[in-house]
Amino acid sequence: MYNPQLDTFIAVVDAGSFTKAANTLYISPTAVIKQINLLEEKLNLKLFVRTHRGLILTEAGKSIYHDAKYMVQYAKDSVIRAQNAMKKEDTVIRIGTSPMTPSQILVDLWPKVHELCPNIKFRLVPFENTPENAREILKNLGQNIDMVAGIFDETLLEFRQCDGLELFKEPICCAVSLQHPLASRERLKVEDLYGENLMLLQRGQMKQVDILRDDLHHNHPQIHIVDFDFFNTEVFNQCENGNNVLMAVASWKNVHPLLKIIPMEWNHAIPFGLLHSHNPSPAVQLCISALIKLYQKDNQY
Image 1 (cartoon, rainbow, N blue to C red):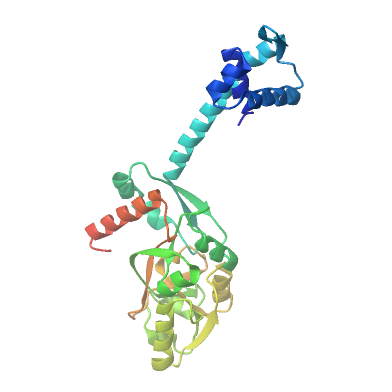
Image 2 (spheres, rainbow, N blue to C red; image 1 turned 90 degrees about the vertical axis):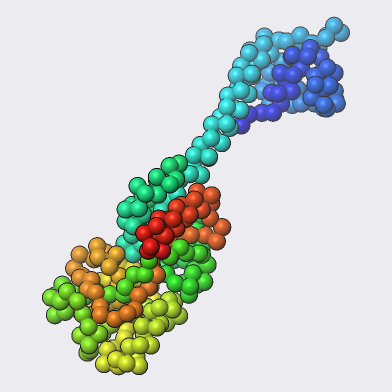
């Protein structure tokens, strides 16, 4: 923050000699003299006149001495302010948000979380939902983003190298174009999908989706399964443009304005909750504890 040789300079002025300053600073007189010489060289100023009677401050030295104490104290105060700011920052939880990872669940819960943790604040951090971003963000939760809300299971957690807090089970629904014949329905049976192209996340990424896939393959072969490798806006566009059916969840109802998400009459569901790092910050830990209390209280967790 400032040149530490200023501390030595101030000590020499206050002590009146190199030797006395050395005793104060617990270093040798030679080291003190060397630091003063370096300071004078760096500033291109002569700070002392050395006489047989001792040290005399030059006019430049007097000016520097007058300002040096303020400079040193200001730098120390600046560090303290920065440390206090860091403490405040530690209470801010950065929530990643994208169309497929909506933050609305946390926004809705915020008043209750705030009652339990009044010092915690949320900051929404938008990000583009691409495979590259998902990989980097979830692998490095706690760096730029602390938590992400969305669907997951143990397979995804292992795949993305993070942890998750399950809040509830999200029933797996189906999304269709508003122009699709099924869009007029408010609820669908699995038989309604016969002859349709059903877009499913490819095998190995989510266990619950694999269970759904196996169920359809063995018991409903009339449904044609189309694989895709990542949920993003382009997948929703493919569903709408290709007049396909896409597995979805109710919380994605606002992802694409030309798609309708319809509940299914089956028992397939997937955990929905908050993804966080293996070693969450104290603020994130407090938030997790608060959410657990809230869901236990409501008998939903």
